[in-house]
Length: 392
Image (cartoon, rainbow, N blue to C red):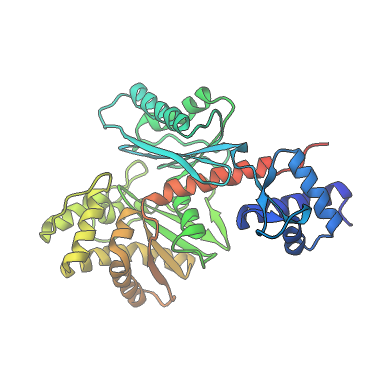
């Protein structure tokens, strides 16, 4: 059955908006060429989108060209403002951008482990409000939040977890109260990192891969055939609980001590570095574990790197045996700090442990992938809503 005229117009409008988002300002003639639509159809959609306040004329194409055909149209970037948060055990980072994803302001605040729930939430919310003000954003349309822990697939809410501070869960509700007009969405930090690596980082050429997060804790994100997989309870990728050899015991339902986390978490990496005499001082917000791995690569600390690669290969080969992703990205600050050197050592070991060919790559975005993924997700959600056809 052919699409109705209104449906066809909606499809054409969204196609034009996506092209303007990806290519930047375009003339009506360029839109005609890229969409394959007739000249009258392009003229109609330009008129509709201009009237809706989604696009505007931003200049003319070429110094010698004048007239209607030379007008350049672009998306109205300040039609909506977005915020992205990276919520960690030790603090919060925030960026505010326009509808095109251009960062307008950013900042972060440390939150100590002894800070009470109320003060911690207030610090984080105040940071969001301050950064939005610095960006000139009088109102936030969408707020994307990346946080550790499980996201309930039925409600989209951060589930209670004994390993996370209470202020994490309270923050989401408080942001919604203080920003009643904003759409607030929360997603697992590792999942957001994987989306960012796929769009802008190490997995740009992959529609199937696994991101192994290596930071304060460990986690994994699974992307199969271009889609992020969350699992029945939202727990796909909780690799920290994976029982592995070389630990003092087994993990439990409430603690991942004894699981893969005990081999590859930041505390385990720091302890291993001490055994091999690797020392480093973290610069700024860089985790100590990442600084130690970076120092080991720089100094050629082969013993430390070999043992760390042995440990990581246990987790990677387990994932490979079940999913056969073909590619594993070592993510987070630690994965980025290890670079090609650590990735190559892990790949060599996985090749010996598994018959399934697997490429191991270092993160291109490091810890910044969470914030980038949160911003990309917020932009996608905002554009999906704003670019949607009006209800009739």
